Length: 541
Ligand code: SF4
Ligand code: SF4
Image 1 (cartoon, rainbow, N blue to C red):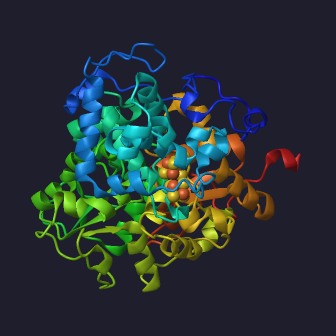
Image 2: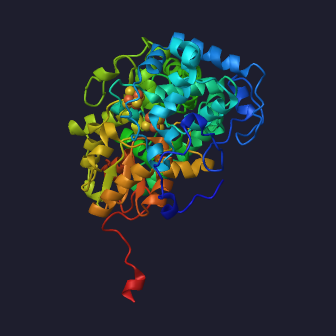
Image 3: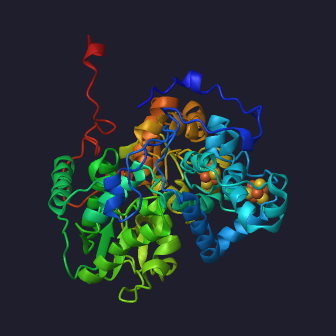
């Protein structure tokens, strides 16, 4: 991993245009600005072609002789298949409204990170082969040949886009650069040019059901470890079940919640909540991953990895599916699952067994997000909550791009947080809700070697956190996305030290007053609750 410059160095960002035109400015791979390429064994597992040992820094990328033909044929197929792609290629007027809306452009100053120019990397090649003006006028019409340099540029910049869709919000035509990135990544994948941080987890998920490659017995062991932890904190022993046929609800969450702090504390919150309301639910050790790194690879792989959710729901005979706090999982479910792998006619429209609320919004997918489920419980007075247990926290909320901009979850998480915390402060309005800034590490870019770009891309998000940290003393950043729970801690440590990261259901777990619980003196991190701090012995001296 390349050393990341210190914040006072990284903040020196030039947004001046380069001396050469964008078509004549070559791409330069250096440590810190790209992710390591996919390994052959990861591509082989899912049957993706052209696995090999290579590095983007190599002159020769070891592509087959007919690589250009493969890409252009792939582009032709996708133009026929995806009407949006053809539309997005044709209708951009290059007005520039999206230009300064991308966190990677803001944090790097690299013009090719302007959404309009990122899309133009593909659009210029499209023009050359698929438009009359491009064929006749070439460069004057903004067209160019697909060359090896262009292909390398694609790898660089389509893996410097987190598919967050912030740019599309500001485009008068609704052009979605994230979808252009998805297609460009598909084209790169035709030649084995994925990144390992996407291909590895996707391969693991294909083999074992989760990104980390954890086998069923280990998955169960981990959750049982948290059962012990909960008992230590509350005195209550929760009793999750696994692969139980006939349960009413199948619960699926990203494996990051099971294996990495601070997601694990969020998972403890899930377990406590389900126990407290007596939910008839089961975990699956096969559909043990809510995330879907296939969605960062190709529509085809996304579909294959997603299929296990409905398959497992069918095998277990549940009525509907409840999903944990995840970001891109919800984009896949909300936007694609029903049409890719459904309709799941064997499932029922979700109805909360506790409140009787019918989730009309999940009529087709048959899957409900936990934050709306919990908001409904609170609204119906089904939970006993003591928000003062979170009084050591001043909380803000990061709208993770996919559940917020992609799905419209703006009010539910805030409603839950305000019921379990007494101190909540929103970040400035142009950085939240639809306009939220990305964490800078989504869509499979949450790897170590990309850390410099992650810190650059996360700068606008961190800057907004810094505002509420400085003005209100905010010390906790909450979110409903597992990738965010993994990537925001280093981002905060870098730009806003002193701000922690939590899932919303960790806050719920802290505030939840459970039947039969003992005196709670610590939170789920085993830190003292407010009022139970040990006196600092040094101060007494
Ligand atoms: S989708 Fe997000 S990361 Fe990609 S170009 Fe648009 S704003 Fe930038
Ligand atoms: S805002 Fe839309 S039309 Fe304008 S440059 Fe960006 S993508 Fe093109």
